[in-house]
Image (tube, rainbow, N blue to C red; front, side, top):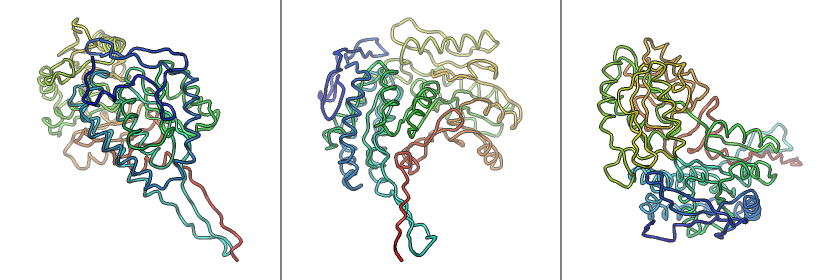
Length: 486
């Protein structure tokens, strides 16, 4: 039973054209608490037909929404921001119940989500054009920026509110309309935000949410529709590639925030206490289920043993449990499948010669839990080095020289985020510039907020989210040649 201060936030239907509606088929799917496996709700199981209905609604609402001034759209977004923050506790509770993360982390995510709505409400007022020096006295050359049109947004389960807000904020602010498909594991958070969006005065059809388990069918409706101008996706690299291929048929604008394989390099001259604290904060947030969390911990030989001992001592103290328990630091993974994947990666590494220091034994107490784990002696040929772990496992690899560490860090097709610890100013510049990643944290792992450009290189994605750069991904540039002036 879900008990909210504002019960109206709990919705189990699609949100299309400003109305709550069942899937056209009448089907539903269950949403369960990963800590207890208890069913929380039965939610409308929409499909391509429902997605098409939502696209029609968004297309119909587009002319009116984009014709508003940036100031007028900002008023709605500011009100939405205020409502999100005033309902922070209920929204956090819903998130913890369906996603599993500790309640303190869920509260933080709600504030993080709201920050994108607030930031882009202001940033849209600063979408400037240009006057280009003319090539002839009979003409003037102008550049303006206009909303791309209808945006289809597909969001993941690990940050169900923040990832949706990071896409809706800029899209709505500049005058686009949106059809969103949240992950089927965590639809309740997205639907609750729609309750508040409607209360904030965002008109019918401007933002729509289609829930459902047929991710492929809904995705194909998005990519196949000529009325959808842009696809924005956060999720796995494999699915991102499928969406890119499909979007090519109608040459859509795309933003792709895909998988990561983040290294943390700890050099001999690092502040070890700070490096251990940062590694734990990055690795074990959301039980390791983040795309920018520490995935490979690379430690230089001179401090390897000291770092590992300190890391192991701290990790062994982390409390695992239901996210509603204030003592919990590590919640459950999202599913049994996720637990199996992590277990397989760890077992494979140990079988290939890695050493288990802490954890590794899955409790049989119900729920999808995996213990905080530390393994050492991992090598680059192991699967755990090449794949995203997406679980609370620190895999430590030793390296000797700066060049060796940089080579190991870059030995991946992913390129989202990387971190390193050193007190050498020359090394800071060499390594920061040498890492083939879209984001780099130097002596810091808390690198993400609404004002920075979030995104990667190589197979980690296309485009940037957040910041003033994130606005451009929702705009088309138009040149206007004003002639006949002589």
